[in-house]
Image (cartoon, rainbow, N blue to C red; front, side, top):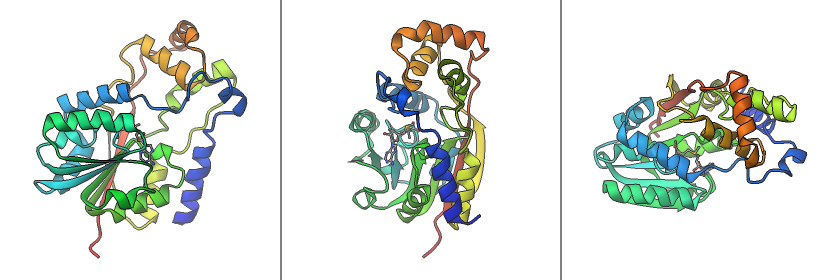
Length: 268
Ligand SMILES: C[S@@+](CC[C@H](N)C(=O)[O-])C[C@H]1O[C@@H](n2cnc3c(N)ncnc32)[C@H](O)[C@@H]1O
């Protein structure tokens, strides 16, 4: 398959995750929204215990005092642990609240930061160019992945690093969707689909995989609250969700596999 066909397959598979309108209409809150508090906690863990292939591959290519562009930065889990090396951090995110969490942490770490609020690649020109570009846990939100990846490449002078879970981040709760709504959730796209597309675009992609460094949830109550949010259920059903997840053997939730793909920028 060529890049165009792989991109189209990615787009269609992602579209198949759309929540049926009759279920969405009953959602008490936006089921796709990301919580800045949750991602801030994850960032603080990454700051306390930095490591893993994504940070290693970024650090390896980032010159001392270099510029790092973090696309879909959230509060900075994929960039701020490298505070000592970063001369300037450019953080792009659609969410002002996420960028606010990042700015607090960048100030504390003494990192000079420029934030760009908006959607990649639409705001790519505003963000500018960097030695290394990283985008972690963003691509399952991106229907036109080819344009997204090409823009990452065009804005890096040395390397692009992308991190994503092996399967769609909502995959783990598919049995609960079937239980509560009677519908089967899709399986694809998966990380291999992103790798295949990046390779078809002509990037010399390399891949590493590891177990996620963090539990998905620390408590069953957290799991239940998340399922209510993501599966469009009233928060009052949290206890029922927790009991169901227990009875289906879904607790504790196994850790995800996280995939890092990266390529060096071709000399132009
Ligand atoms: C799952 S969070 C990951 C945050 C962080 N990179 C991490 O690894 O913890 C995804 C973030 O990407 C942002 N986002 C999603 N699509 C985006 C896009 N096309 N351009 C910029 N930000 C995006 C969301 O607002 C959110 O903050």
